[in-house]
Length: 282
Ligand SMILES: *[C@@H]1O[C@H](CO)[C@@H](O)[C@H](O)[C@H]1NC(C)=O
Ligand SMILES: *[C@@H]1O[C@H](CO)[C@@H](O)[C@H](O)[C@H]1NC(C)=O
Image 1: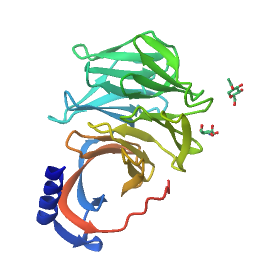
Image 2: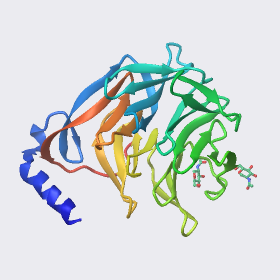
Image 3: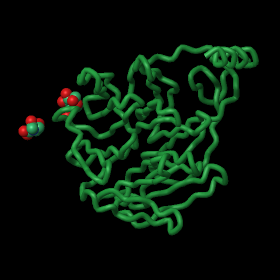
Image 4: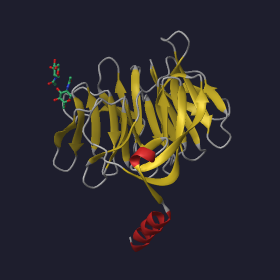
């Protein structure tokens, strides 16, 4: 802790503090950032997921005809773009860092990547149409159009019944194994300890992710938010219009997708004096 405080002091002491009006680029948590485009001409990239072992970003995107989903990835070391084949209607991505497994959700179940062939094969554990995947000591997934939450763990698929008979489009699980889920009514939080669900806010999510330390981040079409691991307080990090998805690199840098590109936010180290509101604005 002492070390952390010391680091903060050093960062503050070396950072240049400038007025918000003079801040170039995008302000993330009070610090000015520049945009680095990692990939252009990729339509509607959704559901970004980091593979921290290989430093690769996985995502889904739309092929020219907007109805066909495809799976792409970028090697963040070389910035090379690649695709994954074999998944019917591949839309969702998640990575288990411990076993180093990359999973995809398609229109007929859950697939696992073969790194050598760059092909994914259906695990044949469910034939549900998978909307989203989230890995936390097990593979959580939501289905479409039923909007139900399931968990694939120890070779079994079970319905996540704790959160009640509710609908959920996106699900995220924190370090305490408490469950965030969103539906068209907003963002909800299921606390395992007291088995209670609370309404976090009227956020309409289009992406939810965790960083390398398990902290939960989410995005709405117009902003990026982080959830405090202890207090569950939601903090708005940045206002950006037209966000489709987010992921957090191992050094904490934000990656996000817009309508047709994938962008990295790079810190300039300049602290801007600003007041960000934390209200949902979608
Ligand atoms: C769950 O909700 C649906 C629709 O709201 C309802 O039809 C169904 O009976 C409910 N199931 C249970 C087990 O309560
Ligand atoms: C969203 O989830 C909450 C909490 O379970 C539930 O009360 C609400 O009815 C759900 N909204 C919709 C549109 O299903």
